[in-house]
Length: 449
Image 1 (cartoon, rainbow, N blue to C red):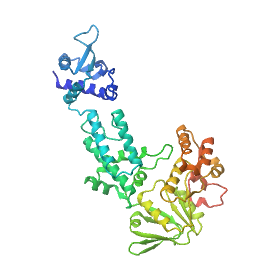
Image 2: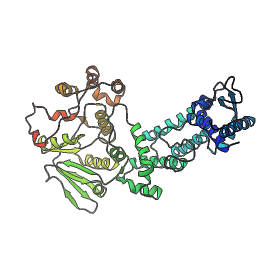
Image 3: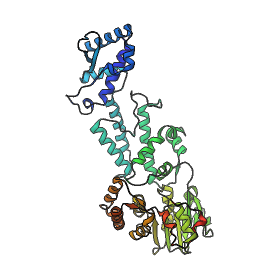
Image 4: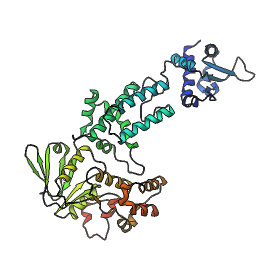
């Protein structure tokens, strides 16, 4: 008998078993088999009489031990094997796993489920939050389907991942990162640099980047609602407070930042815009606003520059919002809003699309309940209709229809109905290239999108 053939036969059968209804549904009617004729390399090998004898001897021994059954090609008994069947008995299957040195898929699923449950009990996840919801969804799917979801590490033969690292350790560390990120997102601290986080969690500053980052990005992308634009990788991580370098926040207006040591940084003397980094924000005690009656949050960089240079009035503070905002930027926005007088009017300008609506509602939900959308209504879309982009995906239209069932988006119901009826959406850059606006936009050398 050949140990090599034994392992090859049983491994091939176990691969098929783990993808079959016999495994996922415990189906009594399922069959798990393979046909040697379908394996060209094996058939070529069996042209050698000695190898063929070893192969047939191995089949006979495995059948005697009750691990497999096999059938001959009709009229070729003792010569050509038609099919090899795995015996679907729990004890026999366990023995087949032992013979191949593999860890069973069921055992690996249970190991990961245990780690997910541990993460859910850790107290680091926001109750009812996206990350907790994600892990609960994965737990449910694993329990029902007995599979390891694509977001986690799964090596075909069990013990090692494609990177040669232990599968269980990688999954445990991945969950540790997700918990740490979700906790960091809700904390009061500033951004945490990737390599600093990696060194703190794993004692290796590059471990996250080399082994876990792509999986984390995949998970964060899965949490974005249908139809919303996908942010860049750095933006996704930044929303959870994980950054490559300190962030830069931009603003234009009469603002003074006051440090904890009493030092004052005056930004009002910069009419073309000013900057502050996230490290400095972490050292601030508070900010002061002088003669600010309106605060504008603007999502797009080109629109922020355009508005700051050509539209801003002396009593307005303009802030570059960007798409996602990190915990550090959230703290910065919070300090500004705390400094604003009660009568200050707050506006937000984003694209007229699902992403823009989501950005606005998050701002109002988390920071500025009194915020109002600016140039995000039906009238604006009608005015710039010729510059609007067509909606061609049914999935996107379905996403818009879902918003009509959500009271949080009521302020946009009118424009959403118009978008659905006419199948259009509008990027806010188009609003600064209107010839009806007598503004020197050519000085910015802006490119239309």
